[in-house]
Length: 142
Image (cartoon, rainbow, N blue to C red; front, side):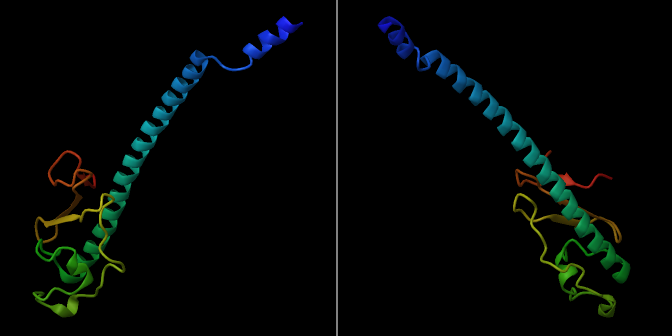
């Protein structure tokens, strides 16, 4: 009887191999969750940037309808908040076209704006790396 109790006491805990196996499984599961979370966060940031670009485009389109041309590259987004001093007919400016401040992109960088022709423009985010012209730039699909 004493021998049986002694065996049970020895067997009461986990072996080092069992503990290491459980730890390895937990690390693998944690890694999978982390990778999935990072991918979801990256997609959310890209989608957020696209939505903000759409909102800025809507404001610029309203400005263009009133003024007759899109803001110049030099005027940029500021023309949506305050009437530019160099407008030919300041009475046409019916802004502000943005109620809130001009937003930063999800990576805390300013959005880029360029007037291409009198009525066309381009808005983009420099993306996670903050460098304009790289592969991770975010803009609306044509």
